[in-house]
Image (cartoon, rainbow, N blue to C red; front, side, top):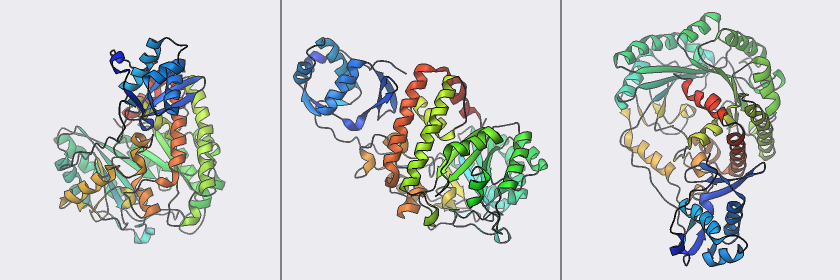
Amino acid sequence: MDTTLISRPGHDARQASPLHFVAANGHKVRAGARELLFHVPSTAVFELDALESEVFGWLARHPVSSVDALLSDFASHEPDEVLRRLDGLRELGIVIDGPWQPVRQKLPRLTRFPLSTLVLNVNTGCNLSCTYCYKEDLDSPADGKRMSLDTAKASIEMLLAESPDLDEYNLVFFGGEPLSNMPLIRAVVEHARPRFAAAGKRVNFTLTTNATLLTEEIIDWLDAHRFGITVSIDGPRRLHDLRRRTVGGKGSYDTVVAKSKMLLARYRSRPVGARVTLTAGVTEIEAIWQHLKGELGFFEVGFSPVTSGELAEFNLGAEDLQRVFDGMKALGARYRDAALRGENIGFSNLHQLMQDLCEGRSKALPCGAGVGMLAVDHEGGLNLCHRFTGSQQARFGSVADGIDREPLAEFIAQRAERAGKGCETCRIRNLCAGGCYHESYAHFGDPQSPTYHYCDLMRDWIDYGIGLYGELMAGAPQFFDSHIAPRRAWGK
């Protein structure tokens, strides 16, 4: 991380120019004794020295001012030193010479979609009946609608035709419970390996499972094919069994834990993560992490809050959400302390934020859905992502007929357009990018709407992450090489 702002010569010629402070482009965050500047357009983080921090604060309090006024109020400092700090802020677009207008850079209109990932919804049936499940196409095991091998093969051909120039692709198996259609998964892998190899390509396989159908033989087969595996589990028994029940209404904890222990004991090819769904009453972040990471031994634990499910009694309300984010910060303190020792405690949410900041990601869209990823339902329809299969949201073509390009391009263009939305001037606009499409769909009935219902909490969470990032870059920069960079290699 740079420890000084960029500066440039030539400031004297501009001393008569008015100064307009652009709050939408810069945000100051404290990290212990340090002051950090988050540059919103680039998502870069700079450490401010004392004078830089004072100049920034003065400009924030005087959003329209002048160089003369600035120098007058900083008369105890060398003028050249003050002007050098001012030039750094000018270089970053945080101070400009005239009134600011939001930069409305529209994405190029998509005519082709750089697909690298397909999610195959291999069976709508599930042997659990989790009370909070968002899946609108979920069926009981007996009524599950299974994808055919022909549909899966057509999906692969569409993927290769749509993005012929990539070196590597990803096939994700989803449900319902994907392991309930294990014969199809085996057949797809047996077909895909030679098909991609013949084209000079690599293919990776991933699945999310409730773990109940795992056997030693299935685990060994998945291991041999280097599947990326995530287990859905909500923590200790008293929390997990509140929502994750069998079709007959019994808790599934004992089975899930027994199968997860078997998986973790035998699986060697890739790290195995846990995914936790947070609902009303299931908000104990540290206790859940301790159980899943510390006691069961999952490599990483990620938390997914539910605020917009169809069944309102399970949704996290304002107080629940506050508890969730407070708990995430408390776990973040453990993450920081471990990172300063060179260790990784496997907190996926914060680990991902550290990766975004380290890599300087600046997002026009919240995720790759609809651009680099589409989900294929059991009939072969193309959906924005796996959360939308079976929903009332329009499909965007089929594997047989290809992508319905114009409607999908229009959807992406509308979602990327920030004019008139709160995102236009929001300081986390290039990290959040409006939030999850399906969360907006469930909460507002419109996947185009930003997730306004937890913007304040997200801003606070990202501020927390920026501060922690600054602490780690100052105190343990090697952590990013040792633990952040390898995340990208997991799928190789």
